[in-house]
Every structure is written in structure tokens, then in C-alpha cells.
Length: 299
Image 1: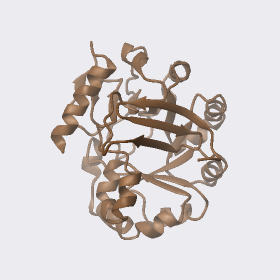
Image 2: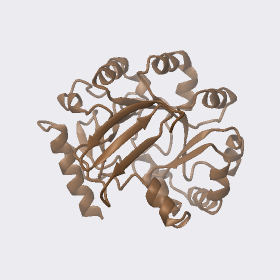
Image 3: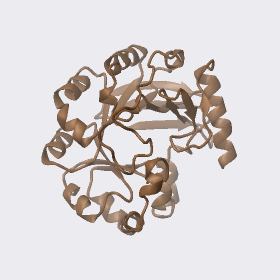
């Protein structure tokens, strides 16, 4: 990582974390497993409001969806260096998004923002200002049309990652993205919310295509990363040598990560967890301990 600037370094339980300005994350431990004292990454939903109406939306977001309360005391417990994946709904619709970003920057939290491609195209100057001020370190764009303006921005900004859902991305979409030195995040298809009713044979066929062609797919981008659900759906544990998988794998959900829904004021292991817990009167550490206990039950 000699060519990239270190933007975060801290100890968490029995391991150390190093974060670099290109989005790289290195976790090191002298032991055989990572045991976290606090979450080093959090998926944070700040709103249910969105005008897209995506049929696979696992959050069931809508144009009249509610906004979450960014003043919850638990957010002030976030450790410097923690990566916060801010999403919705459409997070850009939240009237206090910038206030949240500035507060997190003061705390040393690394904020990443996920937006739909259509919302990105309507708000490029605003998003660029967030990036320039280091309020947002990583930008995730959920692919909707793969328009040239989106791809050009992603090619010119190293911390922009295009989000592609397994089952939604097909071969024709992949071809539009190939060989442009792009960073891709593959997300598993979530049979949750509206995604449950939208699931079809076409979804399964697209997942099968991607699974069969994942080696070629990964070779056409500068970086390809996966969420845990995508790793499972694409059987990545058996697609790469065990030593490579273990070196790159960031751990099971709930071992160093958690999900927080500010709209419903709940927390859980992940955004698709059926079991949720109230945020009221709990500290971050208390919530995380509950998450780790739930995650252990799922192993």
C-alpha cells in the first residue's frame, strides 16, 4: 500500500485495522481469528424515502417514506475509523444528511454513501462537494442504466464503486461495464421486502450465468468485491484457492459488522435479519454484543 495514504489506524479487540485512501482495508491479528470489541463497519439506513420504486427493493422504500433520527445518542459512540455505509431509501433526500456527515467527520468516522444511479445523475455537484470535503470517502452507485456520464465519473474517481445485484445484472449489462478500469461491488439478491415477490426464474438464470462466468467477469475490472450474500450465491469459497479466500474474507456478518435502521430505530446482524432489536436505551457496545450473540447462533 506504499502508493496510498493511510487514513485510519486503530486497534479493535485482538486485531489492528488500517484504512487507505483508495478504499483498501487491512486487518491483522496474531491469532487465528478476529475478535472485535466494537463494529468496524456499520450498514446505516437513514431514510425509507425514495421515488424510484425499484421492484427488488428489500427495504420497501417509497416516495412518502419516513426519515430517520440522526440525533440518536448511539451514533456518538462510533469509534474513529469505523466505516459507515450510509443508505436508504435515497439518502440524498434526508434533510439532515450533511449534518450527519459533518458530525461523523468530526468523530473520525469514515463515511461511505450509496445512491441510485438516477439520483446520482441529478446530484453530481452536491456529491462531488461531499467527496472534495472528505465528508464522503467512498461512493457507491447502484447501477440502473449504465449511462456514459456515470461510467466516466467512476473512471475518474478512484473511490467510486458500482453496485451490481446478482440476478439483476445480466450479460448485456456486464458487457457495458467491461474493460473500463472500474471498481465493482457484487451484492447478493435479497429475498426480502419487495425482492421476495420479484424473485423469478430470470433472476435465478442471471445468478447462474454470473456464477458460471465469474472468473472472466472479475478479470474485466480493476477491483471486484462481494458482500457475504453474493459470496454465498456465487459459491466463491469454491471458486478461488482457500488461502486466497481466507486472506481476503472479512468475516461472517455480525462478527465485526452490524446493521442499524434509524427509521424504525432498530438494529440487527444485517439488513435481511428477521430478528430486530430496539435502539432505545442501548449503547453501541451493548447493541454490538447482542449482534455478535445472534451471529454466533447462525453459524
